[in-house]
Structures are given as structure tokens and as C-alpha cells.
Image (tube, rainbow, N blue to C red; front, side, top):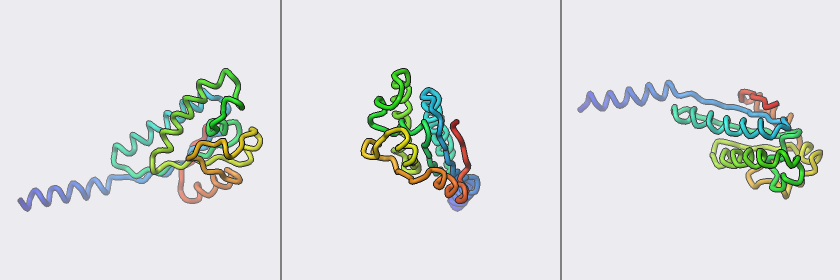
Length: 150
């Protein structure tokens, strides 16, 4: 019996030593709705893969430039008609990501203004930053790996 307890302890200890901590900052400035949709799907699947291995994951998505319409409830008023379907799908993946307790979504206030998007039109899980560049620098200084969607 002591052998099995010791084996269980060693297994847990080895697993703990092998577990990794991932901190990633995904930065989106792309105006290509199909590309944004594919990247939101990819981020979701990437987080799944890391968590499946038992790793700790912390993800921040910063959205600025032409990417911010994806966080608007009224995106159909600010994107081209040809982009509505892909923006809706991107928003679906972004919403799924936001339901994870380890994912934060930040939109740039200046980009919202330049895209004529009001803060009250944002999805409820979106945090607004005065300047997403400042947020990006802060997270990089905290050790977050920078991943750009351009």
C-alpha cells in the first residue's frame, strides 16, 4: 500500500514539474473578417490544447484598428455587407473565448471612435482601454508572448 501511495505522489510531482505556464497576448488589427474568424477559432483550439496537457494558460486579446467591429453588437452597421457572415462567426468564437476564466478581451477606445462604435454597443465581456498599445506594452513587460493578427 505504501508503494502505491508513493507512486501516486511521484506521479503527481512529475506532472507538476512538467506543467507549464503560458501567457499569450493576441493582438488583432486586421480588417479581414475571414482571417479574424480563423484566428479566433485558432486561439480557442490552442487554449484547449494547452489546458488538455494540464498547463496553466492566461490569454489577453487586444483589438484595435479595423479589428474592433468584431466586438460591436451592431457590427453590421460598420462592416461591409460582404463581411457580415465572417464577422458574425468571428464574434461567435470570441464570445466562446470570453467565457473562459483565463481570457480577457480588450478593445482600444481610439479605434472604437475611429470606427464609429459607441462603448454602449460593445459585447458585455469587452474591457475598453484608452490606448491598446499601452496595454500591449504592459502585458509584454509582464512576460506575455506577443502574437499579432495583421
